[in-house]
Image (cartoon, rainbow, N blue to C red):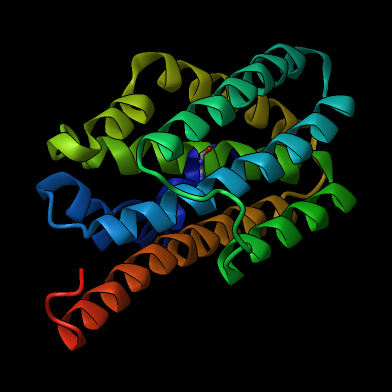
Length: 217
Ligand code: HMH
């Protein structure tokens, strides 16, 4: 089994993760700022968890996977700084509690750390590929969100995802059993939907409050 096969066999789950209403709102500009801001602060937490997970994955990586994983770690450190700049520009407090979906992702990472290397690498590739496809589908994006769309639609990010896919495929080719990797792939799609949902719900709540208290915004 190869990673690309999973995208085909789990097509419905894949589409749910990559074609969410959040992304429609990014594309046409209808996404409420409160939804976007919630996504931003939660993704900043997510990236910190991802960095920890990926650092531990690098420690047990096969030789050819080391370069993409190490390059990816450097990029994640820079990405955290970029999130912090974006948050400052939007006057957002990054010192927030993780949403349930963010905590669920952190628990998933912990579970992967205790599990097989091919499953962990497959999950990493899958979650990065979700971002590549999801944001590309939102391209070019409304002006307010364009910088974010550009980040994950960039050719360099595509190259990174392709390198991870190659590394995951190599690991899967050597695995005796890929059932856990398949499950990890499916888990990623569900966690991604949950993550987008948190943001969309925050936008709806902000809209409701604005409606209840007209003129106080
Ligand atoms: C929730 N999934 C989520 N956030 C991200 N930044 C990525 C994937 C890609 O790194």
